Image 1 (tube, one colour):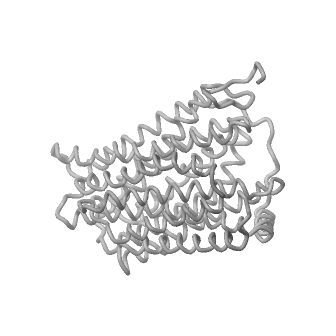
Image 2 (cartoon, one colour; image 1 turned 90 degrees about the horizontal axis):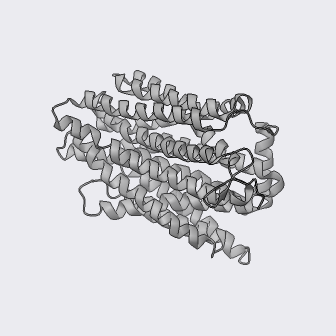
Image 3 (cartoon, helix red, strand yellow; image 1 turned 45 degrees about the vertical axis):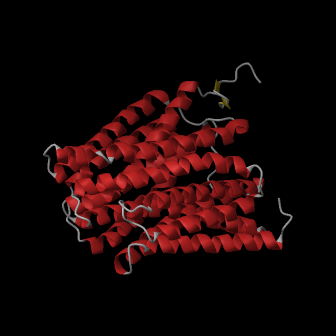
Length: 430
């Protein structure tokens, strides 16, 4: 090891990066995913407390909000990346958090759906900035030999952030209402706490991330060329199609848990006679159980990956996810005796899909076209979000509240069958 190498624990940092830069990034990753998870969790509360939206319309509204958010994020991710190449990662990340803070202040002021949609679209600009920097700075900081370890540490921080944000902030409205405050004001104060966290994180990013611009900026590939190269790679190797499918469904899984699971829990609690504030508190426990189960199972599944064929790992992941999401379609009552088991299965299924998609993609993507393959995988991930928010939201209202779970559970099973086909057709593939 070079004497000038700087390490954060066992992670070797790229030249020019300090331990403070790495710690700042891990804190930013913790808050980033925490805030994005929390805004999805709290949206049903706003629909019930602020807008008084009938329950048979909430699925489509949540779907439209998610669909619109993803479209805006897709349009702005490339400009945010280009801007960070010109002015540096630090200002873009900090501005992104300032934007999220402003969005959290605006959200509880909405009293009509157009106003709420406008707030969501405004918030999406900040999501695009922090989401792009989350991935970009992750690629910048570690040396190549420590990349996998640093990605794992970052993933743990992200999962912990999502769990704690919902666990802590999700309980605030009930406590405020119990002290005599009305539900609308309680929601406004809760979101103000989230805004304050974003403001603090913006300051931390500005002080702690590396100053300046990247020393080497690669040429950005055109979208048409990226699509063509990524598809050609998959035609030459069907296992890359499998990786794309895993990427699609792993992000679809996130939407089901982040949007429809929390909405269904809150709505069922209200139907059972709880207030809006009590309902969001009741929904917190199963949601946190799901995320905690995912965090714990990620360690076991990650260790098991080194001992099994990656395609086999994908098949196992899709089996667990399929069982979890289909089970989730049957149980949506936060007081049910089965809800803990269902939440555990959902969390395990989600994390399995995420880890499997990353590992299969990393193994199968050819080195000379890796950028194009990962770029197309990102497009598949966005398609998974758009598909789930649009179709799932409609099914949630028109058919039943369990249908988004059955839909994505079926998709998981279909991908599992494709993985089995790959294993049976090429049994000796490593």
